[in-house]
Length: 391
Image (cartoon, rainbow, N blue to C red; front, side, top):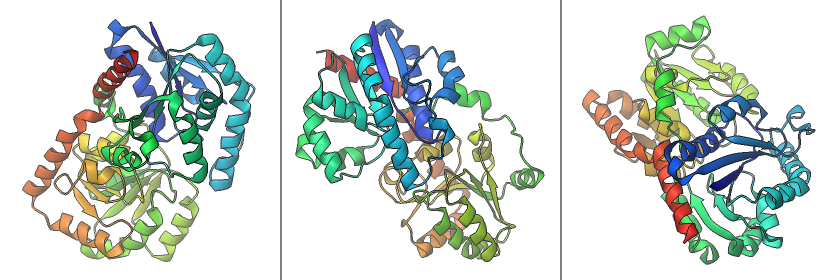
């Protein structure tokens, strides 16, 4: 039996990559039973508590390192608070993680998201497990990260990248090049999506009326610098000149939400902008939207792009690094220059004037590219990586 442990602490429980970790662990159990995989997620500081039922339902073991942690009780948004959370995870989990690795001896240890602790431990201490570093987005190669990775790389068996663009970027560092491969995220769990995609959700009467009209642009993600919603909001008055009947629906929370609401009042578009804090069924909204608009400054790969494409929702996205250009391209949707107001408005104008046949062609082209983001495709590639490591 191959014991595979996942280390993937996180500070916000609504990020899509959390779901991808569960899908990854579950897909190995589901599709490659003959290889006798036993997958386990390590909970560092109670961050996985809210997902306990789902994890157990998918026959994934969950190990708690610090049941006495108060991690969930303090705020973790913003730069300073998030860095405090990282340090808390590092020092609180330091000795418990060593103990688990020494006692449980997993065959493979896949690390994701907040990875500094296991990289540090594997650099200065010997373990029997093979370390797999799974990149969740193009990392900033700071002096500290470059130093740590240079020291650790001999003890890392493989580094997986979510997109080919990230693979190319990291290949520029000679000391990493031989360790790199592409492993697309398991964003699409087809059986689960089919169960819920047409189920209606409980929403306010105002939002329900917008959905019935099917005349809205959808954006999904946290109100953060990365998602760039404040820039998009500044463009909305110009977009409304193109079509005065449009509405704009945002699903998410975050530190920029308050300022976003204040600015929508200043711009006199508050009656056209609606926010839903969260939903368990993004597919319902994608099925009814005119288009998904993604104004992000960076994505890797861009989970909502993949989900929107699968649901046949048109995509209008910035050409930010690294996912949109690779996934959407010019023939799978509508790309605009990142952070350019004029480019976004011109691209939406192009979309609104485009023929239905051309729009359909773009949807078809995008959907053809999405097979590699299914749970099965991910499990198949991860299984091949593990088989190669055995040789």
